[in-house]
Every structure is written in C-alpha cells, then in structure tokens.
Image (tube, rainbow over all chains, first blue to last red; front, top):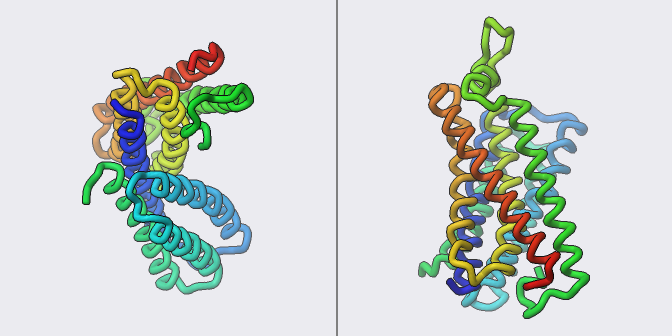
Length: 128
Length: 157
C-alpha cells in the first residue's frame, strides 16, 4: 500500500476519534450544565481545553492542509481562523455568559470541530 | 512532522524520535497499569468498581465519571494514534501489516470506549469484552512504538 494511502487512512481514523472526543465533551457539558463557575473552576477546565482543543485543531488542520487536492490555502485558512475564534469566544464566554448562551457556544464548538473532522475524513477517503 | 516528508531521517531527528517513542511507550504502560489499578483486571473486579458492591463497601461510579474518563481517553488515543501511526507509517510503509496495524489500533481503541459506557447496564459480559479490547489496543500501540524504536536505533530506515 502506498504511503500516501496509509496517511489518508490514518487521517480518517483521527478524524473519527476527534468527532467522538468532541461529542463526548458536548455530552458531558450538557449533563453537568453547571451554573456560573468560579474563576478557579473555570481555569481548571479552560487551561486543559485550550491545550487539548489547540492540539486536536492543529493536527486536524495540518492533516487537512497536507492532504492532496485541498483546493489551495484559502479554505483551510478560513477554517482555522473560524476554529480558533470559536474556541476563544467559547472559553471566554463560559465565565460570564448565561447557561443557554454557553450551551449554544458549546454546540457551535462541537459543530466547528466535527465539521472540520468530517471534511478531513471525506478528503482522506477520497469522497467528493 | 517534517520527518514525514523528508527522504531520509537525520541522526538528530532519529534521536528525537527515539525519545518521543520511549515517552509514548512509558505512557502506554503507565496508562494500562493505572486502568488496571483503578478498575481491576477481572470482569468481577471491573463490574464491582463501576456498579459498586455493597458487601465490599464500594460505591457505584456516577455516569458522568465514566463519560469524563471516556472523553479523556479519546483525547489520549487521538495523540497516541497521531504520533505512533505517523511514525510507524514513515518507517514501515512497505510492510503489508502496516494497514492492519493502523486499523486494529484505531478500531480497538475506539470500540473500548462505548463498551466502557455500557458497563453499568451490560455487566460482566461488557466488562470481559472491555478488558480484552483495552489489552489489545495497549499491546498493539506498545508493540508499534517498540518496532519504531528498534528501527530508529538500528538506523535501517
């Protein structure tokens, strides 16, 4: 099997794992539905997630950029801006926002991550 | 990730990758030991740890705790699969078994997570299945990391 095909297989598997990771995160968030957290409580969650979401987002975007026929730098670049924008707003808003607002942002984060992961999986497996 | 595209791996990159793979191997071993200590190594122990046991004064784990564990495990699997998978493909792309190994690692590690969530309702059957699948994905990842270390140390790739 060609190396590029193996990397595509790996990218598709990683995309699947990313979708499950974000889905369980959203499920957990909705289960807990915590009221306005304390600064310590917020930092405990935010610090870990900034690193974690950054690592997952970077890996997915990196794989998306190196995957063949990605249509140039325009689309992934816009996606990366949207991704990190959503993460920043989400993390910041989780401290001050109302519950429903934060839930909407969590759903938006989930949609962004899973959208990128699905796009990557589609590209990796050659689907149009 | 630059080493993925270069035709040969430089000696410095080789050392860096050996260190990375060693750290990954230690993570795999310590993660498995941690899970074994936390939940046990037999279906009875796992069931008692998750659903509780009145005779042994063990409280059942709340579902949120299980879900948090799965969420964290999926993140670890993402990083593990990315690092070990990419390195293994770079070193052993010509092997026929490479595709099988990547698929086995991905499928077994992913399957273990929903089985873990089913433990409170499915009992000992799910516990036995979870123990097997968890052992498989840790062993596969550990073997892949060791193969990478061996190939890098020999300098054959």
